[in-house]
Image (cartoon, rainbow, N blue to C red):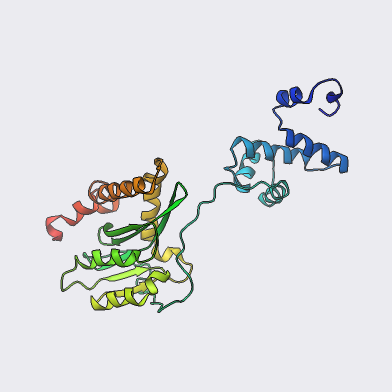
Length: 278
């Protein structure tokens, strides 16, 4: 193309080659400095990146190149993309509430024993974050491990005091004989004195995951994954309030209508309502 510029306008050549102007000048600059053995590979990386509008990081770009027949290592592609200033524009993040030890840390009493033989025996909880139109919405639910039912939840644009409102909802449903175990991660909310005092007053045993081990709370992680794949990623929300309404409707659907194979094809509420279990 550099040679053809002598007789043809650059714009026409770029359009015919489907090449960005920046790519052309980058390659010309590299040629002026000497031979670049990765020049062709870099060009393909740029083309893949633009084709997918910045959604691909180095792992997906590597896979795309392999589908084109290139035997490349992901570490090389990561390095080349760094040199080109290319990185994925998609940055999904898991909400992490851990801020060090700001209060008492409870032992991992649950210890991944996720099966419960009766209602209000084992509860799990966590907080997840949603981002809509530049704003955040936090969801904090409690799940009963007996039938996977969401027995209480709270949403808020700020995580402060989120879990205490949720906890009050759950505790109001307990009978005098009920003394559940409540498992969470080591988030700062669950270390607060007021939260732990509420647990003690109702005879609830507190349990916490080990630091940085999400598998210790796999049941709640699974619910969040289902929620986001079946609701959040299938819809477009224009506001936090619109998402809040969607969450209310989905949790109602999840509890009452969505069948679960491990519950013999029943919904959580249907499983709870079986005559032999009441």
